Length: 146
Image 1 (cartoon, helix red, strand yellow):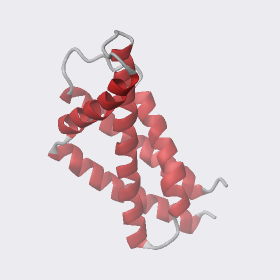
Image 2 (image 1 turned 135 degrees about the vertical axis):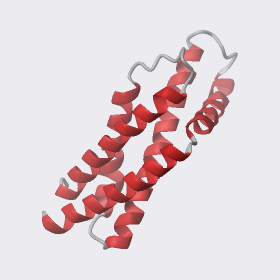
Image 3 (image 1 turned 90 degrees about the vertical axis):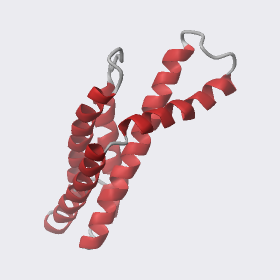
Image 4 (image 1 turned 120 degrees about the vertical axis):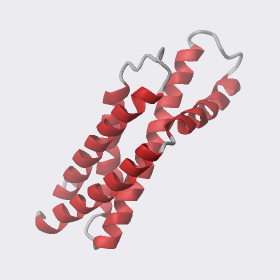
């Protein structure tokens, strides 16, 4: 059911996904073709906000902070997973893998490489602060707009 809390959670996580995407792009190798990187991450932010954070709003300030951090964690998990699958498919189209199992294992290897690349203090602080702000905004929307 659509609520103001779901809308605010989706919008705030989408904005955070946009900001984090802009911070990640310079960390990647120069030859990286980003394609639909930012729109995909914004969509994931909308989905995580709507599905994960919006449904858990209205339980108090501490729960709101935890909700925001959970939403950011799920956003990063989905983001790394989707981008790793995208990279695996790109490599598979170039006949890099011999069989399907090798391609599936490669998703986890590629995802682990992405995590190592983006594990910086700036991104970590942005994620924590952004998650807290998103959680508090969602809680505010839940309390004031029913």
